[in-house]
Image (tube, rainbow, N blue to C red; front, side, top):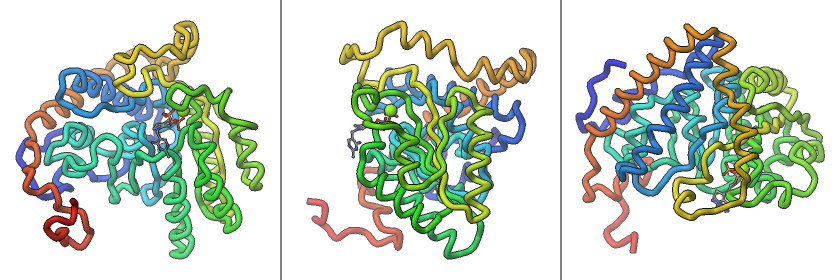
Length: 344
Ligand SMILES: Cc1ncc(C[n+]2csc(CCOP(=O)(O)OP(=O)(O)O)c2C)c(N)n1
Ligand SMILES: [Mg+2]
């Protein structure tokens, strides 16, 4: 990473957005797993120190899903993300400098510091947005898949969502339309067992894959702690969708090692046993991916990632906070400003 950091710029593409992440080799995939893990650890520290305000939903533990899915995509493909979306957008190629600046609300952030943790978007990378509304990315991905079909451009859309979205009506509507119109969309359910503190076991009647099967959509359950298993399953679904075979559905069984969000520690919630957390930590996707490339290669990549993250922190902290006078800028795509008083 070499770009000069810190100068306030009105050009959100001044840094990053240069292309989707290279995830073609096991080493590249390990590097991305490590980058996401390290990014989240860095962000957790910056929440604690007050640099990032408002909290975040850490993706730690679920990295294999983002990396496995994004490794199976082409540069023109599109995706929609969730409230727990840092891993998705990094795996797609977003520059960690600009994502960290976004989390810290800085002018050089991916979205000029106006989106924050839950609304990262980069159309140049096909990222149609993280989303604070559970399930709300699914119809957007279906729309993107329909647009691709109309254009005949062979693009596929991916919709990431959690087990909490399985009971949202909009997800079922999205599955139905995608199946009826045989749209090139892959639904990726990250089943981490909980929606906030609510166990999926007590909230989801039937199963995740059963919902897809009810609409005639081919669905598989995958070990979401295994990057290669996720990648292989995604490749199959993507190939079928691209060839006109319609939508696919993956349930990736995974786990978040941290709390639902960064406020959770202070709330002293007890909805998971230490044994359960330890069992899942023993299935951490990083050591498995490191073993595949060897210790020396993994250590070298750890060092390279640490340098990238140090640069990201420097970049984010050097960037300025936006001028409050401009709070209403960029609300409309055509550059209009809302009339005075319109926000009251
Ligand atoms: C429509 C809607 N309902 C409720 C919420 C509040 N909420 C935020 S995250 C969350 C849990 C989501 O669980 P899941 O989809 O399993 O994702 P995870 O947090 O486990 O990654 C809820 C209920 C919301 N953001 N949107
Ligand atoms: Mg969940």
